[in-house]
Amino acid sequence: MPPTQAESVIKNIIREIGQECAAHGEIVSETLAAFMVKAVVLDPRNGFNMDRTLMKSDVQKLIKLCVSRLLDSKNPSLDTIKMQVYFDMNYTSREEFLKEHHRIFESRLGSVTREITDNRACSRDELESLYRKIVSYVLLRSGLGSPTDIKVVREATVPAILQEAIPATTQHIDSQLQTAQDQAYRYTAILEKVAKNPLMSMELQPFMLKEALYNVRQYEIFLQIILSDIIACAQEVEMMIKQLGAQLEQLKMTIKSKTAVPTSQVFPTFIALSNLWTSFQNETVLISVLSNLTTHLEPFLGAHEHLFPEKVMQNLLEGLTVKTDVCRMKEHMEDRVHLEDVRKQEWLFPETTANFDKLLIQYRGFCAYTFATTDGLLLPGNAAIGILKYKEKYYTFNTRHAAYLFAESPEKYIDLIKEQAQKNAELIQLLELHQQFETLIPYSQMKDVDKHHIKPITKCESSTQTDTHILPPTIVRSYEWNEWELRRKAIKLANLRQKVTHSVQTDLSHMRRENCSQVYPPKDASTQSMREGSTRVPRPQIYIAGLRGGQSKITYGVKVNLTRAVDET
Image (cartoon, rainbow, N blue to C red):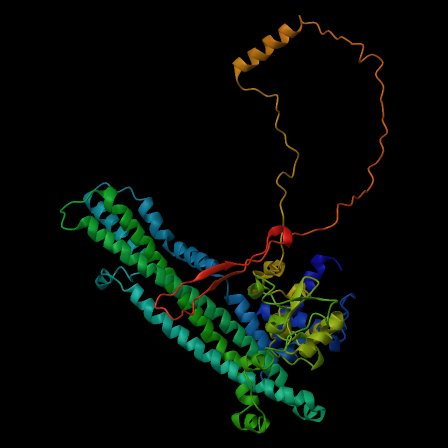
């Protein structure tokens, strides 16, 4: 079928779906109808072959199935799809929000601008009329209010309004986010029990617990996106308030008590204050848009109260422990992947990857193995266990056992997840499966496509050594920059041309040949000296007699030398 003819057929199908729904009292946008058509065609249970041209009976069947799903007001799956379509149609980036706001604002002021620029006032009355138009334009441009109200010509308190609005909006979103997370934790606890008990799964199938979990998880994700934008607005406002104070202080210092101030000194400050005023207005518009977006997302949670009243939830939760995502991660924080067990795949860890927190995890960080093997149960993955890198994509798991099993055959589980998404079309946006289903890429995810190319920056212990001279030296030794040195070398070469080299030969050097000589090697020899001998001097023996005294009072001593002579020894 030619593309133009196929497009015409699709438009007719969408129009008939809208008419059928309107006949039953349900207003359906073309975007929602088109999304539902693609969702019904993708579901293999409906039996549509995308490679074959649709027959008339196929078209009627497609319209009937789409209308039936669009009129099922108690189905959480339909609420999730409506929520996704609404968010995709009304949410955009910060820059495009402001760009669109300025475009609408300029279009409203276009007529006033033309009246001022095309005016050719000459008389006094005409000039006064032109002056009033300029004042009206300034009041409308500044957003102070209606130019017909004299009370608007006064200073407005835009920074004060923002300082009150941002905390109030943030508190409301935090409250809604906490409620949604608590509901998701309760659904997850019940579905975990169902996954372990097949009989209980058959009993609870009509309750659509799984679809309800997808609905509240999608709501949680959208609230987190809006909350991050509001936090960015709060940071911008805080910075601008500081700039406003600095500019006002500078203006006071410039003017002081002067009766006249040169325009070259004061006008730059006025321009800076005007730009700050416009920035405050931009932040006010963003906060208002994001707050309205949050309010309009709440009605898409209406099916929970009808399907799961508090009494029913209490019965289903009897005997169960409701765990938060943080608690689940803490349970397996130390249960990390061992590289020696899974050497075939590449694993990333916080200590070995510099940009670990910036990697785009597949399936919004939910455990791929659990989702594939438990018929669509969403459990948060724990990056601390280890991130699996497979075909330039990154996967997390809630336990080490799940990581090992997924790593054995990733393609098997990836195909199972794709089949599950074909049955539940809301999973395509919830789990960011737009690469597998390129025709259903939402705008809120189109801006994140480039993030898939973020590569991990791995860290490891390494050392390098640089040679002193990697390349051979290119210094020309013969180069001279001094002109006088060049002149000296030139004169030397010129003088050498007139010189003659002579050589002589003597008789001793004539017919010289190599000679050799032979010597007797030294031998070991020893000599013997005379016998050993020794000499001894006589031992002195000297005695003194008469020391004991006698009869006389005077004592006389006699020295007797009995030492032998040297030759007698």
